[in-house]
Image (cartoon, rainbow, N blue to C red; front, side, top):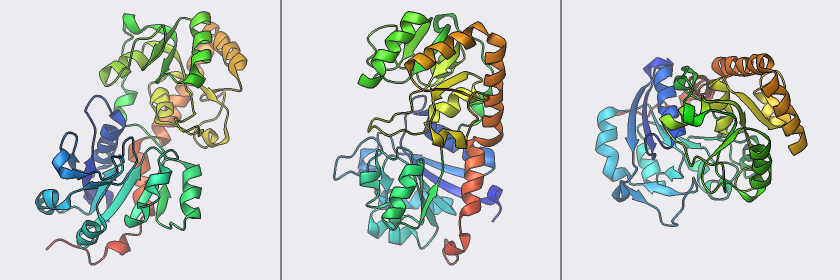
Length: 331
């Protein structure tokens, strides 16, 4: 099947302007040429059944098929795509809808949510994970329908924007405070013109930034510092890596093997081994703006060529065995 002929029902939950990754996924599907029916269930509690009160990407959070079936039937998708958030159908509803189309689940918070998602990931025709470590964990549980699909960006992130005075700085951190981040953030604010964006930072904070304010903040700094540790303590390649590089910013992150799948350290992004190494490299690149710009532009070009949702979904759909869906069709 030609990708531009694909019809996809995208079932998700997000607040526009707040959770941009889920909007970016929608945009990426359309940029690929797919026709998308978005069913955003934010605030539509009667359409969901959350028996375990799961949050933050954990599941299952059951979508009530009987409440949406007429909308889906009228659209007649080739695929239904669950956009993270632990969303899925019950076993009975999954069997019902598989008469008509394929079902794909996306998980965007692995490995942190693996302990709950592993219990139902095999119910989808295919299930994606954003983590190489989680991919191995699923396979250890004998799941053979798991596909690795890392984060990406949509085309909005490459659009140039002018700096905004209130957000201008040399160094920015866009992410919430955690105990393991406070000491380094304090060193950054003491050493450089630094702004911290997110919740619970003790000082030098602008608060959380979402939507257009994220773009204003990102485009008004020279350097962005990334923390690759997840809330559960895993080291992972996060979506902010691709967002920062797409915006043409010089990204600093720890050296770790998985990052090397996406960028060349010290040519497209800047790696650091510890706090002292980061401080030294920030001093260097802030005082050598031409070199900083060269690395940032190389990172942006790599992202443009390889790390968009358009590329991710083209790769994903290229891996799918669409023969599995033969015989499934709408009356």
